[in-house]
Structure formats: structure tokens, C-alpha cells
Amino acid sequence: MILLSVLIPLALFAAIYYYFSYMPGAQSEWEKLPTLDVYLARHPAKNNIITCHNCRHTGRMDIGLVQISDYRRKIICTQCKTTLWREQD
Ligand SMILES: [Zn+2]
Image (cartoon, rainbow, N blue to C red; front, side, top):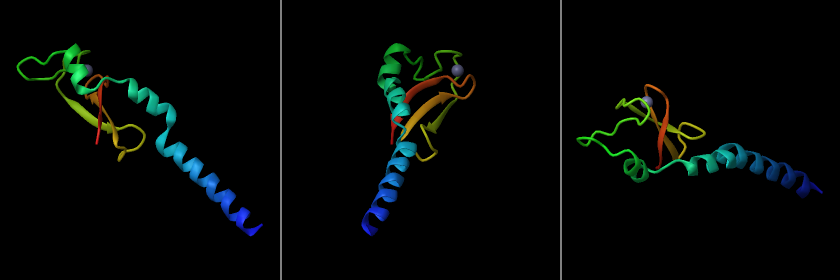
């Protein structure tokens, strides 16, 4: 009985932690984003300068998918905030 009273909250905590740190819904959306190679195939760099396909701005920002230290990274345009491609640390 004592074992169950410890295991059930522990399992519940683990499930909640997994859900909010991994976010399965966000994962599937992230996987739909192009990789850098696919992005460059669709929007070739001119003079080795990669630009945003939406506004032609060259500034980019690297953000975590769910949290700042997330290994799943999204590269977004600093001007129009369009998501350009995904990366993985
Ligand atoms: Zn842009």
C-alpha cells in the first residue's frame, strides 16, 4: 500500500514532466519544418548569404521549440518572425 502511494504520484509526475518538456504536438509540428538543406534547395542563397524567403532579411534567431535549452531548435527571421528551418543540437 505504501509502495503504491509512492509509485502512483511518481508515475503521474513523470508523465506530466514528459508531456510538458517533450510536447508531442510541438514535436510533430517541428518535424514538418524543413532542414537547412531543404530550405536552401527551395530558397538558394545568393553570394552565400541566406535570406528570409518572406522578407529577404538576413537576420536570424535561434530559439528552442518548447524551452530555451530545448535541443529542438527553430531558426526564425528577426524581422518578420517567419520560421525558416529547424535544427537539432
Ligand atoms: Zn523575414
